[in-house]
Length: 141
Image: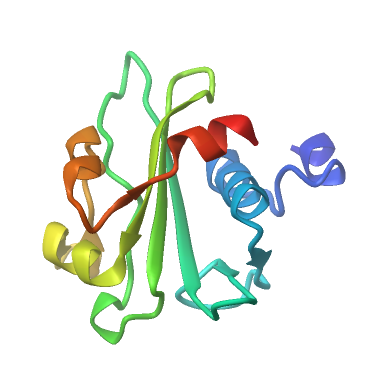
């Protein structure tokens, strides 16, 4: 983890998939990563002002669930777009998308246990015309 942090691949000692995803998405889309203390979003598009929440999920033979980590305070719309990435066990991008906050709200469920919304990022979500697929952009980055 220390080496990954020194190389700028991850920003913290947290889950490396989360930090790697933030790095990959921001590079591919030309976004500026926000400070780690910024609540609600991870990156900003300085041209459009759009706020991006970035989440990644590594799917393995032992855990095939595409459930993303908790999305907090969704009612207050703390971000404009969710950038979601699903990886295979080797961290190759399987599929990725930009999902507007209103679609996230519609497609997720509230969990009182975690006081957050939960989104299951299945591949068929890419079929929604409001969702923009970015798989090729991330794979190229």
